[in-house]
Length: 99
Image 1 (cartoon, helix red, strand yellow):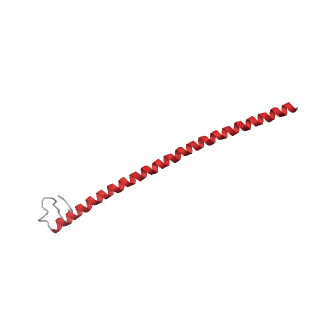
Image 2: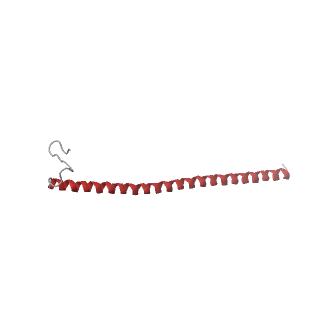
């Protein structure tokens, strides 16, 4: 092997190292892009869950308010059935509540 062969081998190794470095850069860039997409998706999901939590809390509050109103009216009806006629008819006994 002479000096030209040595230089040729050295240039091949340098080209191989440069190609490997470019390949690694592309892999890192691709991985970074995919990781950014994953993070963005997680952020969107967290925001959606926050919105849903607020909507559910609002609906629970509305239902709670309705139940409280109905309970108060039922209590008033039981206390004075004469003043609440026609609106509710409560039947107590073994059958439970009915119309």
